[in-house]
Length: 117
Image: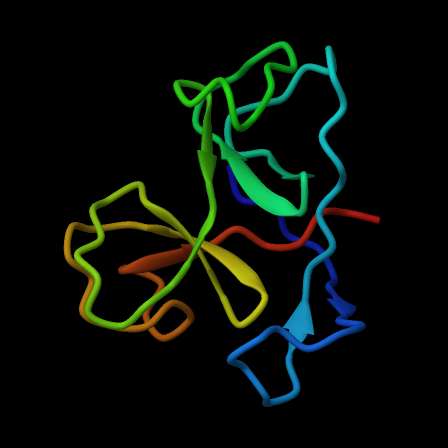
């Protein structure tokens, strides 16, 4: 499920990234709130991606339902379905061992978009 909407401009810069960019603001996780597959939430300062529909399980405990969104790093061996943050946006690997950076090829990386306001 791709969520398409306008993005917000980031307040502080991300460490290690100095160029101006557009960043998404993802909602905070709420206990007992149902989440659909593909939902992205902020929990304890980190982003999590819902791998499966769930009734609000704790993201850093329920790893069957949630995957922590890692920062993309060139050369890391990603597999289809891995979720990364690159330049303030969240992407899911569409193939094993994508050869491009997120945002360069939509067949290799699927941008998840920003939440609707």
